[in-house]
Image (cartoon, rainbow, N blue to C red; front, top):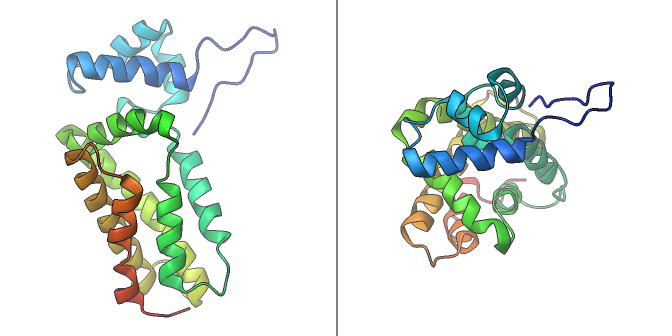
Length: 199
């Protein structure tokens, strides 16, 4: 995801990705996602539309935050798994680690995921983001099994893992006092049934 580079004059950037997200989420909470425009967000941050678009290609990308960087981290997390770890367990651990957050940001993450999962107008864009997320897993499974990411097994593991993760998130949002990590651990345990002890 692109960011603004500091001009040669030494003048600091007009804003930051975090500032845009903070302003946008505040407006989303006050007015609703659909009723909040890009111009509203830019005005709240004190920048122009062009500057905002340097950070986020569209309003629909804002709820996803630094998604490209997150996917890079996800891929690195999976790649760092020991090769002798069963495939199901490696994917299981990777997904749980990817979705583990410090206590001081968990409320913010809950707000983000509530917006992503419960806003109808975001769903079409979310399909594109989910595809990128699944591809990270498919690529890892393909590398482990000597396959292509588009082969049946890697594709299926990506889809199954996403479904298990989303079901955990839906439970977590319905049960504010529940542990996201515990829900993911329980849900993703079913990967063992699907993948067995395949290496």
